[in-house]
Image 1 (tube, helix red, strand yellow):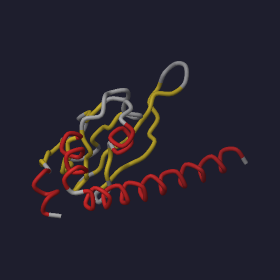
Image 2: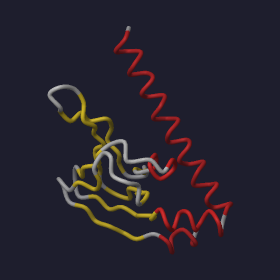
Image 3: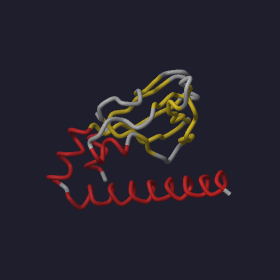
Length: 130
């Protein structure tokens, strides 16, 4: 994975920092090395923010928009001092062309993460609707 490490930049974020807003274009995939962030969305009338999930060390965010090319589906706000390794969309696309085996491993890891999130969401819906 040295190839991936060479593509990553490291960013430190402080509490309250908004990494990106809901609706923003995809630019990068973020791997949390330390700390925690919140994903939240605007809901209801009047509009208010609702926390969708907490994302901590060993997890990634920004994956949906990077995978499908659509605008960001949530806002990301830093909860505590957080260290992220960042893979830009441009570098991710280049990685797919030059190292398809490595990008396939990243896709698999992201698919497992998304599967886990969807199962949690389904469980929450069952609890809310029963």
